[in-house]
Image (tube, rainbow, N blue to C red; front, side, top):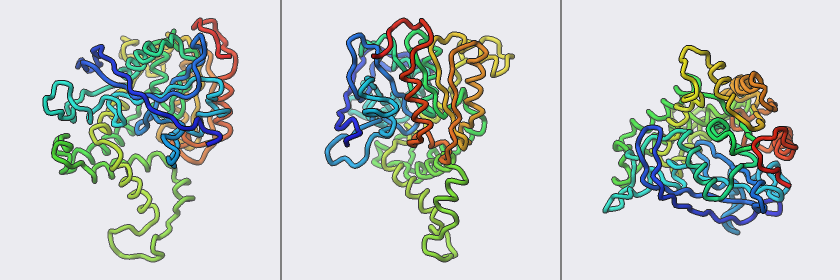
Length: 393
């Protein structure tokens, strides 16, 4: 653990302020689970917010105990002398509402339930914008007026982008990694196949499976298998598995024969035990709904690029946009759309397209050029006079 933040303890924060969501439903109160790494400086100018992806959580770095063998999901990014250097920065990672990792979500007991039954399918649909609003409330609770940076990969990158539009005066740097300004029809289609796998499972029970003492295991396994295929590339799968047979010969049946089948079933099985089905439905819908131009562009006839350009005119921060050559889920062309819209507004933006063989999952890997780009961006002098808070020492 010498290069790690070490043992970390999550903290649960309670918010009693009613939260009106984009769907016009109201959460009377909610909880957010967070982890923090490093030390906040005196003027609170060295804080970095980490936004997690679909299956992520607040546990981004370090370990939960001395015997914990699995570090946080972005431990190669966050820590002493790493790209996000905890010797220099105070890092906050939270678990979004709607998740199943401790923050208020479908597995949370309803506040008005005398028997403590969970929200289940009654938990409201949420959006990226809703998450950003709760993160702003978290910022207020922590006394952080301006973030040194907000960083996210994949769905986390969408949150970072939304932050730059909705709260332009509250962040100095925005790091958008392996992300997109909105989902393509193909991506929405993948999400729908995954959702239908869950919804059609007999054990889904209209979302009330916890009360029935079961869960849609097969649906979750299939949903994860579909997702996992899209996170990898053909070349990565070929290098890892090829057409290798598990037993070395054809078995002429429908059980596992190829190594890649075994891998996908293992990943699906593991995921089904650790992730809530209603949460998966909510998260994928939040991805589908994401469009930062909503509310900023009135003319529906304008092109997507023009709408994005108009929306990003509101931003005040510096941007780093990172894509990966083999990411076909959120291809480099989608990152380029963000870059083009920023450049059209003469906004300060750096862009790097990293050659990596891991597909969409590349943002989770320790790739030197990628890590160096993030570290350099976070430590470089700020190029604008706004926002006004000082740089980290």
